Image (cartoon, rainbow, N blue to C red; front, top):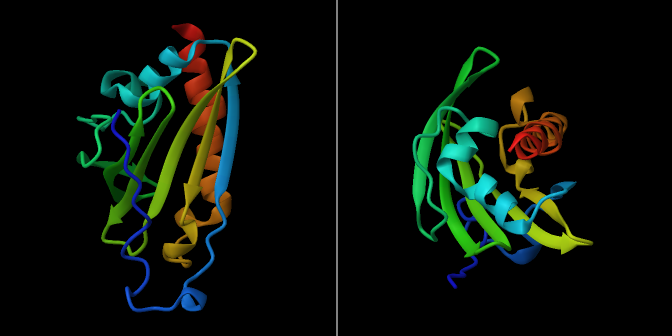
Length: 164
C-alpha cells in the first residue's frame, strides 16, 4: 500500500508563523452509491472512466503518489490549464491530489475518500484551499466551487455509476 501525505505548498511563505497562515474552510460533498467500493474507486482513478464523467480533455491519469498530469479546460470564455500532482493513495479508500491552474496563483488539495455503509459506498469529496485562488475571478468563488463539485459528484458521477 502506498501512502504519503503532503500539505498544501506554495500558498504561504515557509517562514510564516502558524498564526499568519490563512484558515482554509473545506468544501465537502458526500454521495452514497448503490455499488461496491471497487466500482467507485475505478470510476475516480481510471483515466478512461474519468474522461466519461469528469474531464473529457484529460489524457492521462495514474493513482500513484508523485504522478503529475495537466490538461486544458475552456470555461466561461477562459482557458484553465489544470495541473494535478497525486500526493496520497490508499487503494479503494482514499486519493488526494494537489490542483493548480496554470497562470493563476493558488492551489487546493482535493481528496476522494471511500467508505462502506450498509452494502453501499459513500464517497466524501473534500476540496481544501479555494481561498488561495484570486478572489476577483468568479470561477474561483466558493459558490462556483461548491456548485461544480456537486454537479460532478451528485450528478455526473452518479449518472455514470448507475449506467454501468
